[in-house]
Length: 300
Length: 275
Image (cartoon, rainbow over all chains, first blue to last red; front, side, top):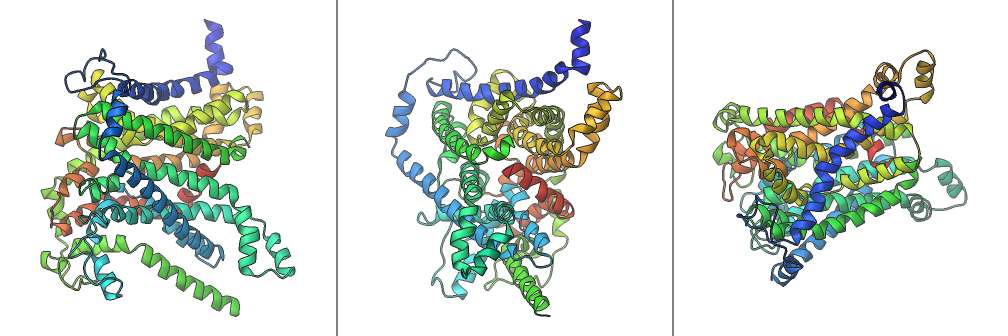
């Protein structure tokens, strides 16, 4: 007994104690729900059997049912579009801004940091602001687009089935651009300056330097940021709740909102769990890519 | 001289870019001060002609914001406390050793970091309701947020511990400190700033958390400000000045804290996400 006690205060037991408790907490609060999620996706879960553990197993019926629903395919397509468009927008604008602030003038780093306010704000507040900006008749975005002659009539961003998903994408690009920019800036500042001096001596012009030095040197950073972007866009829920609620008629619905909607609006917990399982497998795959692309730094 | 001109020019362009990017924020502050009719004017005014300063007090009272913000604070402080108590030690051990087990632990933690809350809420909700945790919904939300955010905290704080020289701790051990003594007297004070910044980041996240609170807290008296904002925004609302006033009251403390601590938060964030 005394040996154990002294090990805890002054030996290996100290480290083990420090690490076991949090890992046990994470196992109970994240690991078990993951397993439970898979179990539920093979069960029949309704309001009556919600409280009991002994629910009838139905095999793959939830999966079969899910994919025979007419809205499944459009929602999966929406998710892909949401992810690709959001990441493309965030990355392109973020990279442009990062390159601009890389030129390093007085005040650059402070101003660059200021952009990050979009990222620390509660997602629901961001959603509320964009909901108002994107409003059809009185939205300021429509006004600006009209004044600059881009559009003739008002676009009803939130209620027009052709635009509802883009309303959320615009808000999400705004939200994520700053984070992309900050991480890309870190990557840019890691490129040795003498590479550019050497290239300049060899007579390479600015676009050539960008394609032959900046991009290749940034490859691992870009890989990590794209993977992180995938992870973050698949986590995005608040904007959907605040701007379109997945409507009208599921035209702006994506899987991560749909899973919640199935469980908590339609009380179909089995279907909610089923779509969750599918998406979690997908997210896990993305995070393996992310961890691999930062692995040398994780170890180092 | 040309250097100075170039710097001025770049700064001017940067300010314009920042102004464009931060316009939505400006629009929130401006809309809150507009009257009901000024809000729907075409063309919209970009400067309120008769600012309605009383709107903040009105919204605070009519939406019962004190209660909402108090619940947000309870949830955020609870989550930060739980995460700090559990996460600091974990990060310390993961930083101090380098072997296969640490690699496996880190990998698992990074994997847990990426699970979307809106997908995890289904099993968490069902499990919590079966174990009676939903009787104390705010505590249930704190547990769920802690599980969600602790991996991020551990990654950030581990980077801080990595920068504390191990020789200092070894010297304290040689001087007769126990492991516990060395940890609390030497290592922890040296890592204090990094831990504080990480805790602030977690606090900001938890303060704005929505999915878990929306799903698990049914009683209005216990709901945080994010859920309150959500129920304020009906599908056909036209109270946008009031909603923006609500958003202003909710978000301004966070923005003020962020601007004050900007440098530390940005450097803490980047060290965690890419290292």
